[in-house]
Amino acid sequence: MEYDIKNGPNDAPYILLNPADAIEYDENDVAGPFYMLDRDYQGCIVLPLSKPVLPGSGRVTLGGEAVPYVVKLVQLAAELRVPMLGAKLAGRMGGGRAALEIGGFADEHGNVMKPQTFTVVAKAQAEPRACDAEHEAVALRAAQEGIVLMKNEGDALPVRDAGLSVLG
Image (tube, rainbow, N blue to C red; front, top):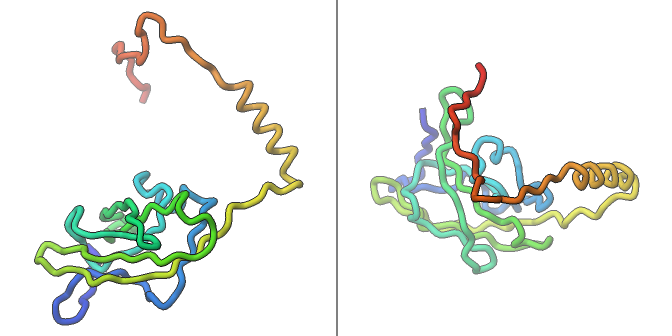
């Protein structure tokens, strides 16, 4: 079953959020919940669409600047696949507010999404907390001691499959 909501007489795709409400984007969490479903959503603010759209048919801008995006059907439940648009905002906000405009996406019937503008409010980059200093020092020391560098003598890397199999 695919998520599909009618949108007036021409049934054009649209975003299932109220543009009057500001959307919060956490710049500290580039691997949000949708990243767990599909790694292409890393660093994205994810918005549900009313219906699937044709690849590359739309545009996404943040403060007038083009933003890379990904649109995929995401499996949210056993029988529920929802088209999700991920706008890659990581490293673009720097805290503050910006206008995110999304539009021009077309469905398989040629219906085209009218531009929708949202206000995105970014949480500022978190400052290190003094109470975490000891834990961060231990983590840094473990990382430094655990790093292994390999010299690629004789072009031995990457190691090709030597007939090894995973147990199972």
